[in-house]
Image: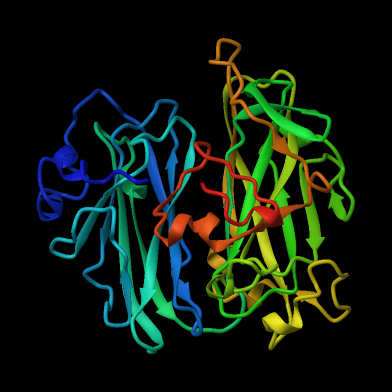
Length: 391
């Protein structure tokens, strides 16, 4: 699903050459001055978890598409006896570097892509496991190279739920008819779009519920108020609480009614008069509602019941709170946009802002080796009965 073998050809050298010639020395194959940036989250693994999908956000901060995008991972400082990277789909590691492409090879103007790579536990050791550097490159030049490289510490510590959040950019207009949401073309000023976001529990204990906070970028408002959610007066921010049990990813099994992930949505309206642009500053945060010692056996009934009275939303109890928040943009097209629908309606199941459905691990992770969570290119809504649906 990810195409990386072209990576070395783009650079004209192996990973060692990348380092030797300078970190940002990608060849100028075209007059492309896209401004890319990279941010990293999620590199702490719970003591009782077998590993984790770590992630970086790849941002295009410019008004032009970035083409032939590469991500290079420097694992020379990673303690691979404790934690290692599953590099399948990338070029084979060379001198401590792993060179990877991204799906489609392009990051569109204003887009923010979540790019994930699996970290795997080795043995039962705990504690610091070194660090990983991640570098983003594209053909042409980057006007600001100061944000093209990020370094994160890797460690194995803590016990409890560990939520990772992915929020898709909003870029398609939708219509709601007869209980179905259908994409109808590019999102323009005055249109309504669908914000979709998901959470995955990669920890070693289950949640008893979720607290969700969403902040919209300037120029967009929520289209409706939903039950069990509170909104600010401007309808640009909400907080919701759901009794959603998310078991650890390693405990998500086919055939049961427990899920490691869940996906949500809200309808968002672009203000009239907004010019074609990428509205940035949107943010989704999902924190676990959790009690010390929570296990699967004590939470099986909570999927349909009210939250326990003694449950509290405590973000500091998440094993790795760095990936509990994800940014998103609202991409507003001009009147001359491509238009046309994406085809196929999206089912409305329950409250508009509510839980769309449990997502089985196999669906959310595409078999466990899904290096790229390709925002905007693929949206899969899964109800509890559809755990085996293919991405």
